[in-house]
Image (cartoon, rainbow, N blue to C red; front, top):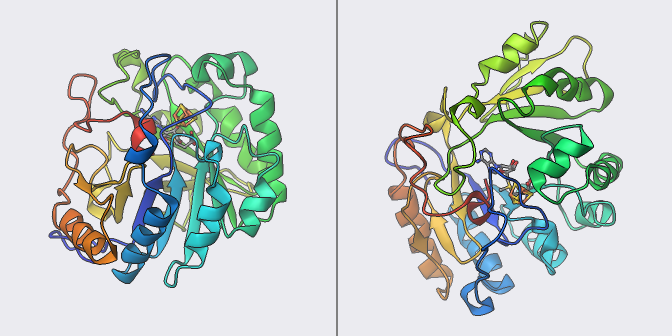
Length: 317
Ligand code: SAM
Ligand code: SF4
């Protein structure tokens, strides 16, 4: 499927749940999460029908996200179902890794090929602060399990936060020398619900280049990230800049929320419902969402916040 601006849409990000075992300060509020009714959410069969509809329209890559996908009871069965859909070439998962120790191998066996792990800090106290309730030790155990489970690719994501982890850019990048994995730094996005951070927390990706003058550009690219490499490193350092160098021109994705809304753009309020539809009805909604994809997400800043009418845990990042 091509959109009105000539972009080929081949990638669907599915939030399988809004729920999470952590409460990262840039993503979710501490309290007041209003749990949706079970019958408002997509069933496993509806989710798989949506993937079949997407694949028949040329989508090739699926990413499962959330909330925390590992809290979803039937996650393995969902993964097996998606892997069996003809046309789907890549099944990816984004997780905070704190529940991964017992699940990494099973996820690999269920068809997950690529895994992205959120890791904003290497300091246990800072980890507990930013996640409000997480344990860095559990995340590290999950990471070790992921590295040993035979995924085609493991990537780490750190949200760049001025005054919180900008002093850890070199230490986080050093992980690419220790492990055959990429470390990607993502500019923090000002969502409507995360007003906790002031202007000084929103630092640009160029801070990473300043902190790591030894980085050299890497020839390969991973879509949204500009890739660099530390001399002798096993993995790349990626810079993802939704704010200061947005990548909307090459955006190839749609998003599907756990309550069955297709989102053409992370930062737009537009949504196309698919819950309750059969495969033909879902296909029509995918086509409408692709047609409705905006050219870019508009300016984003502390004052011009995202127009997405949802928190990040409800969209999937
Ligand atoms: N729970 C999983 C995790 O944390 O990896 C998956 C869902 S989480 C919403 C997906 C990604 O969104 C994570 O890498 C997280 O750091 C990122 N994210 C959440 N809020 C963000 C924000 N305000 N700006 C930039 N990235 C954000
Ligand atoms: Fe949960 Fe991921 Fe959001 Fe953190 S970023 S609160 S782990 S959904």
